[in-house]
Amino acid sequence: RTESAPPAPAAERAVEATQAFASYVALDLQTGTPAETDDLLRTLAAQIGRLCRGYVPPAVGISAPPSDSGTLGGVVPSDGLVVNIGYGASFFDHAHADRRPKGIKAMREFPDDRLQRDECDGDMLLEIRADQQDVVVHALRELTRVTRGGLAVRWRQDGVRPSPRPDGAPRNHFGFKDGTSNPTGADFDSLVWIDEPTQPWTRGGTFVVVRLIRMLTEFWDRVSISEQENMFGRVRTTGAPLDGDVETDVPQYAADPTGDVIPLTAHMRLANPRTPGTDRSRIFRRAYNYVGGMDSNGNLDLGLVFTCLQRDIAGQFEATQDRLEGEPLVDYIAPFGGGYFYLPPRDAGTGVSTTGG
Ligand code: HEM
Image (cartoon, rainbow, N blue to C red):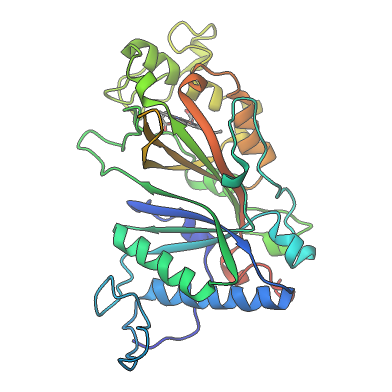
């Protein structure tokens, strides 16, 4: 295979089908000058392009270190690999201050959070997704290989999406289908892609919010099914709303104003009340389950790598998270990390070029 100029990391790729495995890696710049930062971004973009296209690792003499880790064999396949580079608010303190997108900022701490600051934010984010776990790990290794010295890992969380069962959407660690209700079509376009007239270079980009949320499964497993279902507003087996029959049924909150069927405090009802006033605060969600080890008390470290895309972090993700404050679910989850990142549009290269439009 030949290696031509790499395609720009594409924000659009963020919305391709959800791959089974993901790694979210936040990085801090170790570069000294904006020019060094640009060099690093070019190296990163070239390596991403190479990995996404697939390649045959060039031969090196036997006395030199190999040019590829070799973990995928003699031919590196593309295998559905998607890599997105995100830029955190602090990136723009290092370089391209004039290109700081409106609305990017450090992750806000919400009242029910237990944030560990060393697991939050970061100058940059690598979002690596593929259908095979070894492809994700290979990409991560080859990306850190070429950026060593220029980027330091701040936090990392890997996620896995369980294979869809015959009965529909994948389930999270609480046993509920996750990802059922998401904007599509024209709704998706107008909620996700940035369209900020004063910053034309951001048009068609988006913001990704990552939230690392531990799920306290030991507590959860002691809760009755009906209480669990009331917390979400959905039937655990089918994923249907409590007022419906099948997963795709749309809840009818107007017919249940006092929450007799779907409690007013149900997660999905607070998250998306389906009222005209809250319509523009919808988000596009993509969640992966994470599987850690055990904590010092012998409890499982399980949780969600919650991610969502939106054009306006304050007006969409934060507005949604504000509505969820104090929901019954907070006793069973512990958000501890993550960050807000800007994903530039496809044709903007690194998205921070000072010459690009
Ligand atoms: C819906 C679980 C965190 C926003 C749902 C559903 C489940 C769920 C089971 C219903 C099925 C579906 O439509 O996908 C969880 C769990 C969380 C979590 C276990 C934490 C561990 C969050 C966070 C947000 C959020 C942090 C945003 C701030 C939403 C939204 C919906 C939803 C917008 C769709 C509501 C609708 O349109 O009906 N979640 N979620 N969730 N969740 Fe979460």
